[in-house]
Image 1: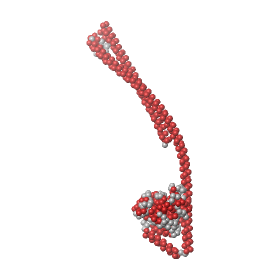
Image 2: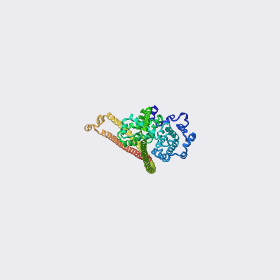
Image 3: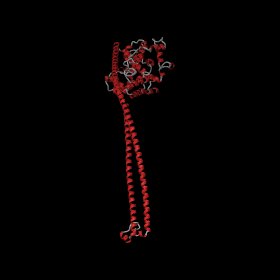
Image 4: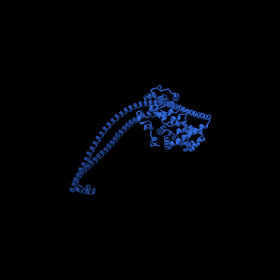
Length: 540
């Protein structure tokens, strides 16, 4: 298998966009994509042989549905349109653009191919094409697949070619999955009972779209034999489950559980890798086809016409029952989808009402928040004004206290200077007195070397009337000097106490000012932040 085909598993776009030349000849590229090849086939058709390309397009894709030719399968097409991908957004609306385009394509093909017309399940393939291109191009690609890729051969001659494909699939199972083949023989499960939709709709009816897109890519590159690769991949990956089932369980597994398994993209990717790695030669398929035709010829020669007709009748009845079952399943899916859509719509309406109520409540909260914001802004302005006044007052108090402290410091320094000067003067005076005492012989008898008065006993011996007056004078001067010194020290102590008191008051005043600043600013800022935060949350 070419590398481009293997790589298509990982491409998000279909290969008919990446390789348009695989679909239409390069000499006819002026027409959109593969539309040219569809027109080439259409011009050979008896109904369109005399029409130009422009007239053909106008006839097939007029602006109104009434411009299309009447189709004998119109009722079947209308019935199937509503069952085609009913949960997909593009096709779920009755009378919407998706259903309208799908109706045009299916009806146009039924008019274009009168021999086959419209067959049940054909709408799924057309819908897959519509999801990637306009309706004109989708129609032309559908024609290309039906004619050039041999899909329409499956619908001809009472589905004879389809039964040949079933035989080929069973022979491939016998070769690749013999245990599952023998199990199907034991439970009388034949290929047409589970694989008819795989061939007729190219897996588009039941499986997820992302898996279907990859299958269509492979088919456009490799041909219709890719169906065998995918079918064998499905059977191989489900072998363990199928070996545990009986006839009814196997049919239910193919109808319900198998499509659900590939809703996982990882499982779908593994399936496509397995399908691409399988080697199924065309020579082998031709061999099985020849075996089938030989077997049919032998049966026709040996079989009684009545038995053949009875067998054909049973086969048709089984096919009819199967189609009716599929029809019932599709109808059930349609009803379920409509109920789910109705519930979703009701839930959406309820959610819309709840959201409207929440919106009104949010608007009211927003209005309240704006009023609260204005109130907080007014309070903030008042607090700022109050803080400014308090700050001005505190600053004036600080200046006043600073001036008082400066005055007290100046007074204290002056007193200290006066005290120092007085102490110096006293020392000088004392030194002078000591000097005089030392110079006086009579005074020397009354004072010792330290300047203190000697004992009374020695003083009485030398006392006389002349020295008493001088002694009293000196004592009086000394007492006056000691008294003045004591008063100076007392004033100094009082000044220091006053300074400490003033410094204490200054510290208290500074602390009060600082605390007032922090308190007012913190309260103001916290209230503003709280109001702003609450308002922001309510607004969100």
